[in-house]
Length: 376
Ligand code: FAD
Image 1 (cartoon, rainbow, N blue to C red):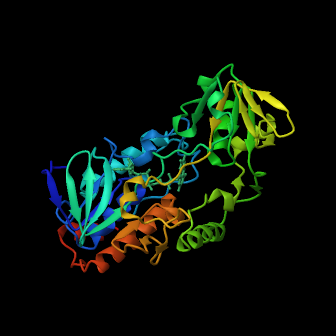
Image 2 (image 1 turned 30 degrees about the vertical axis):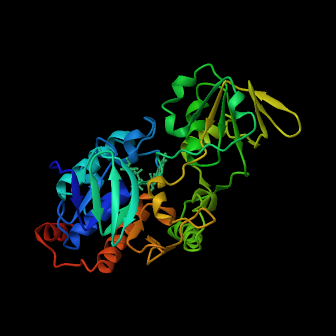
Image 3 (image 1 turned 45 degrees about the vertical axis):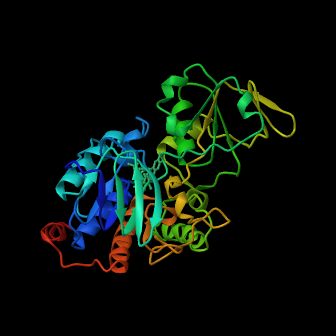
């Protein structure tokens, strides 16, 4: 990516070069916008790969749910896993790097967006490098940078180790320690599956986990997404999709169940210096509390725009609920109903089309657009 000067004026900026940002950029180019002149992608990471480059090493292409191909280029054309045992943290970055190169996507990195504000007709984007002024914004900053740990009384008194999934590296580091895993989602189960093979684990969740028998159908997926979509259209904060879909049995989970590792306890009420306590006074001593309690959207840099409702959510509109109702120049992709690889793909296309139409930017495909159109 060529270096850019101190203050830049563009039509559209995409913030984030994960699945959501790359899909958006692909579609902007396909609509005829010239990469690097009409739009840029700004990404905080020094390397391609979005959040995938930071995921724990035991997460492989066979243990993730499913990473959908970006539009126009299949991962299988770039990565050839042997029995799926390829680390997601290396395979996806390789795929994204090839994708950016194949379509000449203008990703400028590393650059961290600090604040977005309104300047009359335009939006002003302040970063740790240049300032940008744009007519429209596609925000695709994911959740990885905003791990969520709920507050429980006594949390600051715990003398053992506390970490979030975002800082989890491998099960081996917990050898000989008693580990309490908190959370009812896929990450918690993956940690349980790995750590219970080498040491004693305990598991607590707020709600009784729901394990579904049989595969997760496309209809189930659509129903789960629709529930989250309804929430964001009503201005409510998005919910986790897993809370709607339930958990799917995998061979790893069956093995964990056979080891007795899936015995779940209800949520504790207090954290003590050496463990946790339940409302009935019973206690458990542990060395480690591993919070697999999810993430929140990394959108703090949008705060100056005042997009939030009193509920804390942002009211979304548009075909796939990517457009911010309070400011139609702004689309959020990978947010709420599009917070999955397939959702991000589709939302990127919808956001690119709606934003270029809103700004009157739809053009005849240029050279890049034509090349992309042939591929995708
Ligand atoms: P990201 O991949 O997080 O990309 C966001 C990019 O924005 C990053 O590169 C980041 O550096 C950049 N950024 C953030 N803030 C700024 C800023 N202020 N300035 C500049 N750049 C910024 N989904 C699936 O469909 N299948 C799966 O198997 C699956 N497995 C998952 C496993 C785990 C452990 C987790 C946590 C999530 C998983 N998901 C899965 C969800 C999935 O990762 C996401 O929905 C999707 O990959 C996120 O893409 P994204 O582009 O929205 O975000």
